[in-house]
Amino acid sequence: MTLHRAFTFPGIPARVIFGSGTLAQVADAVTSLNRSKALILSTPQQAGQAQDVADRLGPLAAGMFTEAAMHTPVDVTERALAAYESADADCTIAIGGGSTTGLGKAIAIRNGADQVVIPTTYAGSEMTDILGETDKGEKTTRRDPAIRPELVIYDVDLTLGLPVPMTVTSALNAIAHAVEGLYAPDANPITDMMSVAAISAFRDHLPELVTNPAEPQARAEVLYAAWLCSATLGAVTMSLHHKLCHVLGGSFGLPHAETHAIMLPHTAGFNAVAALDRLAPVAEIMGGSVGGGLWDFAKGLGAPMRLSDLGLAEGDIARAAEIATRQPYANPRDFGQDDIAMILTAALRGTRPMT
Image 1 (tube, rainbow, N blue to C red):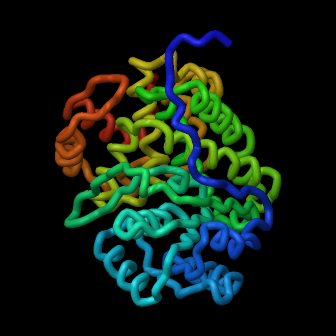
Image 2 (cartoon, helix red, strand yellow):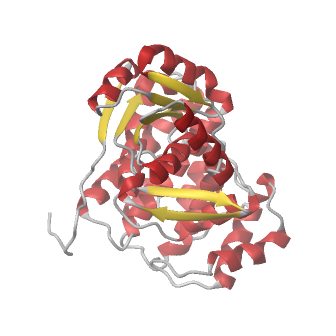
């Protein structure tokens, strides 16, 4: 391999436990952090899984808070902090997808709590130092080393019953991390390798899960790919895709994974014009083009294809474009409000990208 650029690789700070049946190690995970009273976090829908964790912890369980919500609303975090203090907890265990992981991060940045995360989807926020929070109709995002969880337990068994629609959309969400990792200004050869390996694994194994959702080896390969994507996102700068999705989620209430799934072909296709060399592996993996190939892949999986189906209206586009361009951020291709409006209009209608 010939290196064509200097780089800095920040490392992977979080400890990872990966395999089948690894949930059995949750009590050891808490004690390995020198903690003894864990507040268990989940959404209302996953309260049963939170109870399972509590049962496994025994006296190490300080209590449960099962009100985690999409886009990490600040008012929910405030209630969770009160529960944490009332339980006299000294760490959190978040089981679920991005909503629960985000709540654990929001607690940690406020009181320094150690975090154990047990992902049950492929959304991929568990390995990052990124927190997006929603307050008064707008979502703000920040990065801080204190946000990153200390330990992540990936248990393939927890994904065997993940519904196919959520499997598809959260996997496409993960692919978005890899794609943006390839053209990030601080990309490096290690994250490049992880991104390409992850996208290839998703291409090879995700279609199998659409027809055979409980196939354990395919689930293991896809969860491994999601870890690679999450680790990549935790090491590089986010760009246009993630910023737009945060606007759509925080200001318009669109669901997180579905929004990422729909937007990915359009943001990647837009940036491919200026970053075709960096995105060449995506084009190769996806059959010849970046945006068009990702769009074809998503459509073949039965993913949602139109923002209009999620509730965004034509009249929302101008406001979304204005919010998305309020602050500059790194992106391989320059853009203005008209460009954002063009991208959003195509995603609203489900038009196949040409690049």
